[in-house]
Amino acid sequence: MNTFVVGGGVIGLAVAWRAQRSGLTVTLIDPEPASKASHASAGMLPGGSAQLYGQPDLLSLCADSRNLIPSFVAELEEFASAGYRRDGVLDAAFDEDAFQALDRQQSLQESVGVRTERLTPEECRKLQPAFAPVLGGLLSPDDGSVDPRTFTAALSTAFQALGGTLIRRRVTRITDHEVTLDNGDTAAFDRVVLAAGCWTHRIEGLPPGTVPEIRPVRGQIVRLQSDTPLLNLTARANIRGTSLYLVPRLDGELAIGGTYEDGGYDEAPTAEGTRELLTRAAEVIPGVGALRFREISVGLRPGSPDGLPLIGATAVPDVYLASGHYRMGVQLAPVTAEIITALLTDTAPPAVRASGLPGTPVDPPRGG
Ligand code: FAD
Image (cartoon, rainbow, N blue to C red; front, side, top):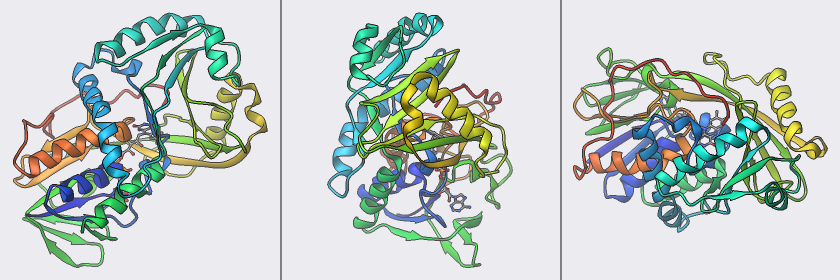
């Protein structure tokens, strides 16, 4: 079965690798794989998030993906390092409201089998001595993060090592079992998976409505550097109703993210984005100003009409969709790849979610 995957962010790469591994002949098409939202991402893999209240389908999809991560990473690491850390995620409460919210957060996480521990202020400080005074915390000791750049590089290596083909071109048009590339070439497929992030609906040729409009939600993220890591483990600093992601890497990098902006397709970082993130970070990590500035980057999160990922078959035969993962694409990559691969190999349980369902506009939550 000649299968095309259009778009090589974390979603397209994960799908391409798992589909190739299952015995399909896969061609991934992307002018610059892993360069967009997946390149900017913090790579946090939390065991749950306050934004999942009232969204049982998404909560259980996240739980399924979380359960897949260890084996997914272990198989990936047969090819290359995945940049995975499983040394805990700390939700730290820096004000009374955030402290009160820890109970709800804990019951949400435990409802999907995530092990949690409540921490006193002293225990939080012991884990993260660089923090400003906290009121308390919630530790998920079995969760962690990946470095998305290492992770996507490993997916690409694994995919190609198994014989997958990468075409560095943009797809401009899809018609009956054929794609047109930006150099005018055409190529025939048996099945195609559309995974082009917030650009997915812009590919021409399919009947109107086949792909719902995917809204770009801009996120800026700052990367700082120190000789030794300033934080010991991944954290969310919860304060004034917002959650700031703090993701330390073993090489001393600290990713601080991210903003939520309706900025269309503009991918230029701004001084205001940098200021906002550094100001918020300094409030919870007083010593952060001493770190070296490494980078500010922008990613466009793909937001579906109702905020839920679009994973499954479309109304057009042999055209599948894996997009709209919004703020959770890295953590949902394993389950997305498993669902799509099962559909492509006709071994699927029903798709978690077919595309094209009507929905309400995405209301971006803060943080992440
Ligand atoms: P993208 O990564 O945007 O990839 C789309 C790909 O499609 C690109 O490579 C592009 O070149 C290609 N493409 C576009 N058009 C075409 C075409 N016509 N033909 C061929 N190829 C095409 N998620 C988490 O799980 N944890 C986090 O901690 C986290 N933090 C984040 C922090 C920030 C600041 C941002 C911006 C996002 C964060 N996310 C996080 C969200 C996550 O990054 C996204 O959900 C995920 O990267 C989406 O992946 P994707 O493959 O769908 O899209």
